Image (cartoon, rainbow, N blue to C red; front, side, top):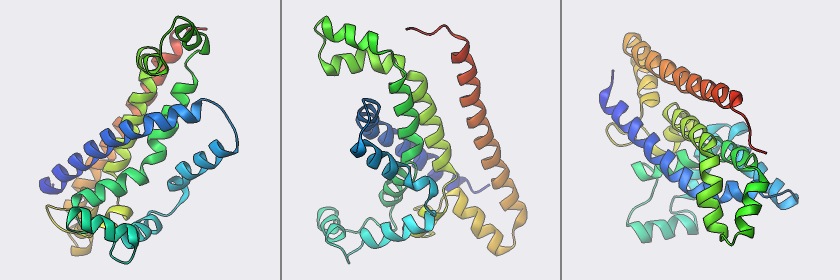
Length: 224
């Protein structure tokens, strides 16, 4: 086991998941609030990483965050260095690639909150923020947990975007999936097998937890 790569992978997944949940909750709440062409366009853009090859996304992030673009030059001026081939850079890339795994469960959870409860809270004088914090979030906690688990697991297994944007720098941007690739290239199949089994088990347990949680919630009486 490459424990350096494992530690970096867990740190990457944890930071990406936390930031993504915080940033996408308002977006998911807006998407759940209604329909319309604008929302459908945003939904399609959010879901794009699910069908887009990760190398394509990684390539555009690599070029877009570099000195060849105005945005990339602004980042360099602001930070003093480019985001490419850095840990913050692969956090940014992982957040974009895992975007649908956070937004879609959150949108479904917010949409499932009974409108009667939120409408009653508004009639009683609660502000929109208070309604969201005291009514919507507690009732959507299962969807939030699902989004967190899926985002974390997806980030742990990410390869293409991390390799394209972060390169293969041990201790800095080399995640466990990239380390597996290196071990195969070296012919060290025993080490690659050990790390692959760890990822396989972790991914399976994460999905099992999501499905078991869904079964528990399905048996509970629903508010209407």
